[in-house]
Image (cartoon, rainbow, N blue to C red; front, top):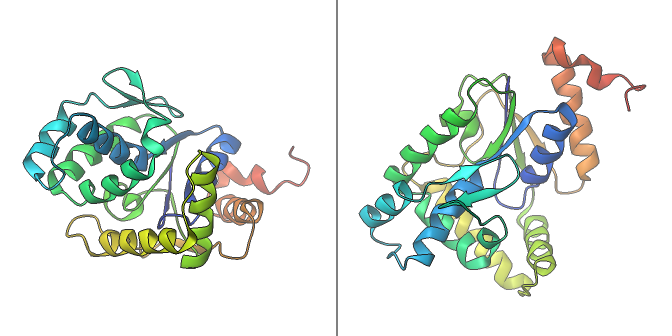
Length: 227
């Protein structure tokens, strides 16, 4: 079974996907980590980000691997290293390159074979898994998303002004929505959830309610006696 969660940066999709996967005992696929891994490789090897061919070669040679929680490049655990602002900014840029997307879409599809998966990203329900069993699209106001992103950076030891965070959010939205391959948009059959003013617990409750209605095998989610 495949459940997709798409949405812009700061919408809460990563937290929701991780917690939903744990709740269902499904594999969690963080596709954003894949693009971050490519960006990390480019930074580490001083690959010019504007050179699409060089970026594609670097991504193919990176030996990117995931175990559901951690990200490995060349066999090295880079889970924390790929969360820096520099990697985040570059990941959004390299994600627009068709060669990179083709490579990583193939890796994503290969990763979920014979697995029950909650997968999150920008194009999971539209491009990567158009036949997914259930699709969600999460969004939130730019202000709410910027506050969340700023808090994430602060917790990792990076301080950034709110105005600068808003600017970065706007730039990323622009790139994600207007790229030629796999642009950010909600699938026609996705359920949209605005997380601007609700808690992550409320988001999960809504997702579980929808899942229990659509998927008979998951109806136990709606059982108030279930721990």
